[in-house]
Length: 283
Length: 295
Image (cartoon, rainbow over the protein chains, first blue to last red):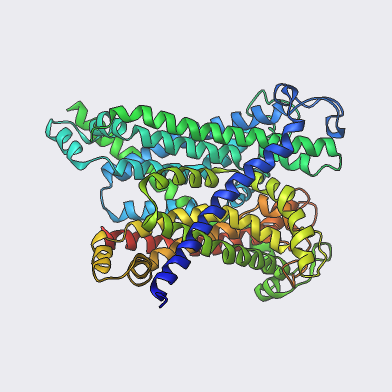
């Protein structure tokens, strides 16, 4: 006699494993396809030179403008976002308690982090028009900072919530104020998680194209001031891919490898650093 | 004394960015409303939403092709990603060995962290030819490969990690006692999932799906690159489509030169924002309830 209950379980277990393999397979496929197609066009010049004359017709040069641009933009944005996010996370954790205001702030941040980056771009673009401003590194930084702030804040907030209340109480009992507890106890205890949240938001900032499409512009030069237009790596991929010249398209694939390498490096950094900072965490 | 003063000052000061950040959403909606006022005064809302005539030069702005494009692509993506994500999440939360969990979870996070432009690139390099040369011919249809199906496939890969990780969290949060009780009654693991875990976790699962849906709804670059961008209502999976985010991203340059065009595009952005915000509010409230109910 066939045991239908067992057959059913076997069937669904098979489906589950197949699903998981599809997920992992697509991750592998993304890496393999981009690396295989991009590798032939990858060269040292790609990452050490800005576009030379005739670059977009397949002649020499690289995309240093976009790599540097993306790093400037993301560094500025993450610094700004962190300066805003950390105080909010402090407020939510130590000063607001379980109040209605805290719940309201949390849910609006959650909702804000679900808004497409394109909308942030459109929003900042409207403001720029209102102020008669032109596309620049400055406005790019503002846009990216705006859209990673909700993400970063909630990340920091979640991490700080996991700090054991006993530790905080011990600190209060020693006479420390709430701020001193935050500074000396909570911050250090949640350091591994803070690093993870920080690098996650940084990765988002580097990889996003839709938000800076309106606000940062595109240029073949490395920006020298906040008022210059700036190229970004994702947009460099996008524009090169749109070219009819095969050599330029091949460079789009190679730029894809560079972007993937940056994302992978951030992910590894985050794991290593959070491991290292775990030594401060008292269990 | 000084220490207490610092403490109080920090408390007051940190309230300011917290309050400002929570207003961001309202400010953004407000600004987009103001900018789309012009088109709303000029044309009625039903015309904007249900007309399929898109001729900006003639002052005709019917968003139906774009709304239809967005809906098609999003639904294809959800149809593909919901079963895959939920099965994966169930496996990881109920069956997988600790070591498998520890290996797979970072990989899923990595997938979630890949920039959308790279997914677009992947779509152009692999999925477009796949749809054009393999899938469509199997149905005796010819297509360029830049179509609804390809857009949906790319989007599905992008939302799978999101839905999987939220569903995993929700499923793991189901009290262990309930599972053990069910197993003790002689149910096997799948029956436990089907009758106990999944029912208990259902609201949270729905929230995970809704969050995935709204992510897919607003995704721009990856879809834009593979979906064909033809302003016509698609009638099959192999027709090109033109979703709203792609419309906005493609036309930002020239929108200032045609009257009402910029306002129309801002209206499109507002439409996107409103849908995403409503979905997100619902999903997040459900998730908060789920977490509170369990802990």
